[in-house]
Image (cartoon, rainbow, N blue to C red; front, side):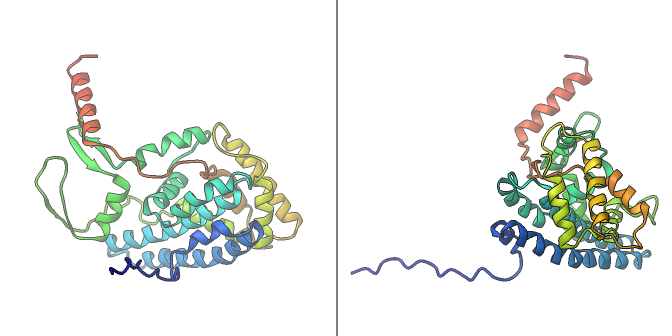
Amino acid sequence: MTKPFASKPKSPDIGLRQAKRLCQMPHEKRLDFIAEGLPIILQSARGFWSAAKTLKDHPREAAVVEGFALEEAAKILILMDMVRCPRKQLPARIGAMVGWFYDHLARIIYAEATDRIRATDVDYLRGAIEHMRKTCYLEGNMGEYILPNWELYIRESRLYADIEAYGDGDPGWSAPHVHERMFKDFEPTTIKLIEAMASLGLFTLDALTILSEVWDQLDFEGKQDHQEATRLVWETLERAQAAKLIPENAAQDDANLLARHWQLPMYALDLSRITVSLEELEAEQEQLLWAEIGYP
């Protein structure tokens, strides 16, 4: 008699990459756990950023380490958006946000949105990040070149020597390279923002509890704008100040930075990759060609 097929033994669910456990935690325990982790992530981001400053004679390596710092900083912003998300909506959104915590592109989008996008409202922000989510795009005067997702390409091309190809071109070797910044001492808003949060004492359980309660007032999912977010920032800081949670050495500039540059909550956005097919790209190329020669 044939023995029944034995199922493969299941390995213990242990080790790293366990942020999914945040999904099962009660709200208060999750806030406590996040408060424990935020200073750890902050130190990781600081370490990378400080190390990058010592590599001025090695621009490629410095850019790689700076990228690590920004992605660590983005983890803080993702966790803070978990806290800012209204409690009724969080169960439906936290799974995706846990995925962002580990996804390179999602973390890059968080940093880019903080550093480069001045969103008028959530719908504007949703549209502004859409191009960053596409797996491929067209480049050139008439879209003659098909290129991969730029954000991920820049990240990978700094890290590795590899074989690459574009569109219908032949493969070739890619040596690690970097696009150097014009201002070498520039500090991204993302880095300054997490330092301001730390200086204002927002990484404690009591402060996160206030943050959660204040931002529970409004779900940022459509036309909610920066003015409404700024109001909630100041309400959060006022309540934290009244509770004596803000350290005495915190500066007004830290509060101003938070009010001006903390991006609108992104918990209601889709940060997954948008797969662009070859057929879609070829159709777009044809439209660009006809537009170039004057046909509607």
